[in-house]
Every structure is written in C-alpha cells, then in structure tokens.
Length: 135
Ligand code: T46
Image 1 (cartoon, rainbow, N blue to C red):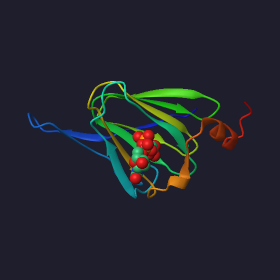
Image 2: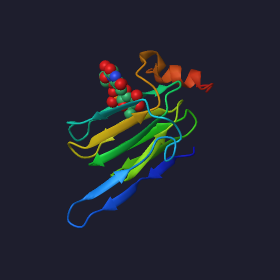
Image 3: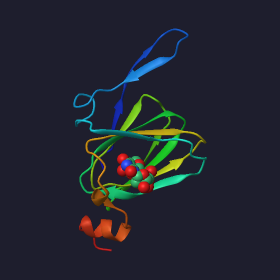
Image 4: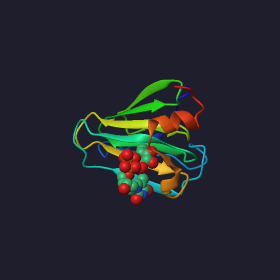
C-alpha cells in the first residue's frame, strides 16, 4: 500500500508560534470543496469505520495525536498524526479508522467533494465485495 503524506510549509516567527500552509492542487493532488474538523473527543475515541467510493481527502492534526488506520482490503497500514505540519492523503476505496491518542486532539479534513451519504460504505463485508476481495 502506498501511503501519501505531505509536509506543510511552516514559517516560525520567533516567540510567536508557527504558521503552516498547504495549497489545493499544488500540495495536495485535488481541489478542495469542503472542510470539516472533529474536536472535543476524549482519549481512546474511535471514529471512522467506513470507506468512500469516490471521495479524496487530506487529514491533518493541528493539535494532539491521532492514529489513522488504513485498509485497502489487501493490506493494512497505520499513520500517526502528531505533527501539525504533517498531512495524510486518503484516497477513495480505503477503509479508515481514527483513534484518539490524546484528549482534545483535533482532526481537520479537507475533501474534494461536498457531503454525500451515498458515497460511504459503512459495512466491512460490503467494502471487501466492492474491492473484489474474496473472504
Ligand atoms: C471521513 C473521516 C475522516 C455531515 O452532515 N456532513 C459532513 O460533511 C460530514 C463529514 C459528516 N456529516 C454528518 C454525518 C453524521 O451524521 O456528521 C455525522 C458524523 O459523521 P461520521 O460518523 O461519518 O464521522 P466520522 O468521524 O466517523 O468520519 C468523518 C467523515 O464522515 C469521513 O468522510 O473520512 O471523518
């Protein structure tokens, strides 16, 4: 499985923190139509448990530490988002789970499409079938 991460350009101002930035279609391989973020989750929170038929996204964690588990039906992989300048590209046809390693960690997501409930596959057996994987 190829894991695509990006390192965001970061500009530190002495004693005033750091500005990190990425640009649609330049630093991530798509245009961005929607941004959402998940906050206020206790440590140990597990979210996700689905795949998308078409949606492509970039995930980043500006505060805290969140483990992302990816599964393409053949291989599984994990990426720890614990650096505000690190982004993870999650392509379509990828089962994902997100596990909060630290309370109040924030997960930000920029997506290439508007919200569409029909794009989700929320049943793992259905996902394997969609991917043509024999159980
Ligand atoms: C993903 C991971 C990383 C909306 O109404 N609009 C939206 O744009 C989104 C993303 C969600 N919702 C509603 C649908 C559900 O009633 O918000 C509720 C929670 O969504 P969900 O259970 O899918 O949340 P997560 O954290 O499991 O998954 C989310 C995204 O849905 C998903 O696309 O890849 O974050």
